[in-house]
Image (tube, rainbow, N blue to C red; front, side):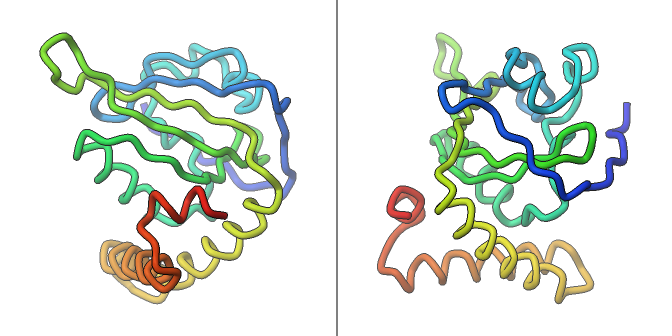
Length: 174
């Protein structure tokens, strides 16, 4: 099934600070589990989400290079933290601070991915709105989306390096 085409409304949604959005995916990023908080904030039913690519909630203002970094990190069998702008079924958006980890079986083989998302601090949302805007501009400067994603990824890493940090340090220093 193809992902539905949703148009952003510009309206922000919020979820309670004590709640955690939880989802699990298979190795291809298809949703295998979504908790009640995820269903509530996204506006999708469990039936609509299960089996769908996690990108069903991807907001068009989210740079591709951030997802490339996420997938590269997961494929290296490491966890990653990221600020992510998501889009609900209605087109409303919501920000999360995501912690994504590989799920291993008893033989240490990766069998899927697990993501917990919390409410981010508003200062971080403001910072990452600006950072992501710059990365999107870089991505859109290129006619080939892959070249744009690569150029924006380099820009992100150079922005972080300019602060004398690695990504993991940067994400927790803001």
